[in-house]
Length: 122
Image (tube, rainbow, N blue to C red; front, side, top):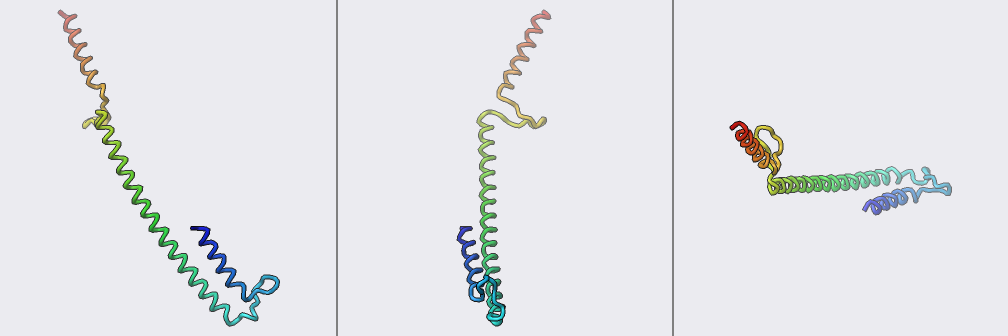
């Protein structure tokens, strides 16, 4: 797409310079004094219109891609949340940290230790 646009711009510039060029490639101002300012004005106006259209199209494309990326990020966050739920991980209300699946085993170990201490005291 960019190559086509650059080719068009190059062609337009060449077309604009062609009628008034002399053998050195310079514009012959004396021969085209009447038409040149009008042609230049038309050329610049067309060029600005093309650039504005391209800018608008690219802006809309970028915004569309940003919206799409936002949706993908939200989907990813949902998927990560689902995986965390499936793994049995959840946020603690007070500490804000994650409690692992093995935390239940730690409670069992404390109970075993407490019962051992009670047996030793008897």
